[in-house]
Length: 487
Image (cartoon, rainbow, N blue to C red; front, top):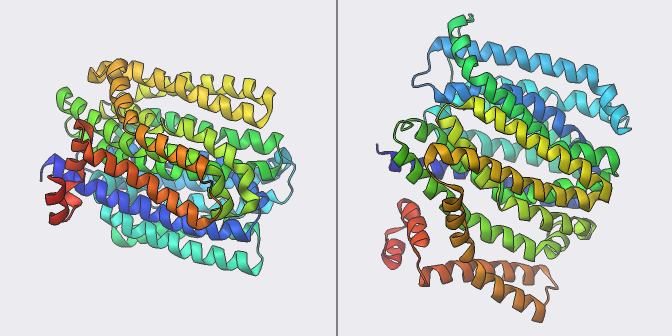
């Protein structure tokens, strides 16, 4: 099977897993947002950073090292399994003991029990790390989709039922915990692993020598990915954190999840051709342009319709989150470029440089937080946008050397794609000024109109970028559609 065919199939099933999961989660969230309060969401968000850091230790190091192996042995599987299981119990124990201090930090006593119950998810995630890594290494994304999507559905149904009965914040706790449990059970059923009662030092040394740098990088990245929740939860009311969290989640539905689809497929595939820099550059250039083709107009649409989306989809209690969403979309438009550039370092085995860059960028974020906090919640958000642009420059400066894909080349490619959204932007903004949105039906109509203008306009004035995107999508299109589109 060619690399192109493998990539196409991989993208399809990762997209099914990611977006099938996100569509379900979006529906579940809309229902929960109408049954629960922003404060309920804020309380859970206060704890996410602690679970994310613990999960980072499990996911980022040894799991990534397994993916990079040409062949995974029983010794490798067993070593990673026992090491991560030990880490899972260790971190759950630390969270259990630390629960009173976490509650004291936020001055919310109810967080003690929430922490101890939600912490069990760390163990559930940890027991299936071998399955997740091996499926990714083997490009078995179809199995991952079959594991993740049903788990989201089951957890969501239970969570909605609990919220309707009146369990409040515990509905969100149940959703988080049940998803971790059912997804791990499904992974074991779909991909049974032969686990030996042994720990191989040679396997550990080989995997850990590469993985520990990614582990430290992942720890830094995860900490700072959620650091704003920690700061907002400490210095602002729980409801403000709830607004921020849900605005961030909505922005990430497109920007982060589409990027993770491409990243998840491209890393194992391009690791196989790491010796051919020309092919890697060509591949990454296509990744940059194709993801930008979808993410840029999506972020613009969210900026245009932020307030009516909050009002008519989530409910009037969420309208204060609209400005948060608009600001976050400015940085969200660049997220895929961060991830794509950093993936280069993993493909070339430069986990040392990966770690170095993470440290530099985290210093940048820390300064943005310290300065932004002086100007309130909007100062924090604007600082987040500025720091993301600085971080992107740092990423591209280093990775350009590996690909011979300079900052200027990337900028030109990105600006070309951004230019494709100009007609849609002009038409939609003009129409909303003349005919403001007054209902859910009008909002749906405007969203459909925006997407139609963008797609039809680009099909009529077919550029090189549009042609490339159509060729990538061709394997999934019906024959009649391909004939009409001439692909």
